[in-house]
Image (tube, rainbow, N blue to C red; front, side):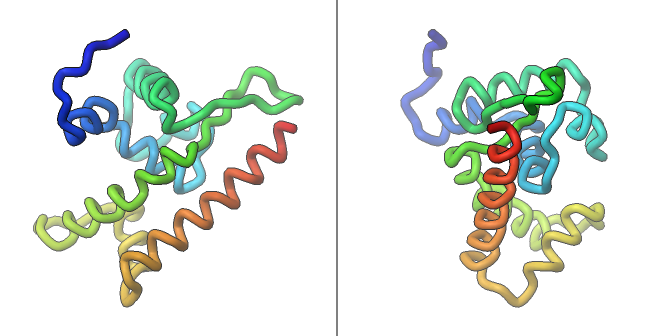
Length: 145
């Protein structure tokens, strides 16, 4: 069992999601990516060994689960647990912070998400996104039954 480096809640969270890839993977799952191949095609260009490691870390810490389709036992489908879904407010707030404080042009993923949320409360945006993902997760789980 891995020893905690600190008993601070922030440190504990950063031990799981504090690298530069874990929140991107969670974001991509929210946006509909489900397979290793789909994650590899992200514009951020994550290396395959790092992706495999982060998927394993997120699975071991209960943020994602993995399943396979009955008719395709080779392809793994990754989906968020409730714990993983609870990360969306953090992702959304970080995107808003970047939009407000970093003087740069963002790519299509961030721009589209921020544009679609204009004029809505943060609470409403987060609620809509998490509800939408819960429907997606139900569709995934219905396919594997």
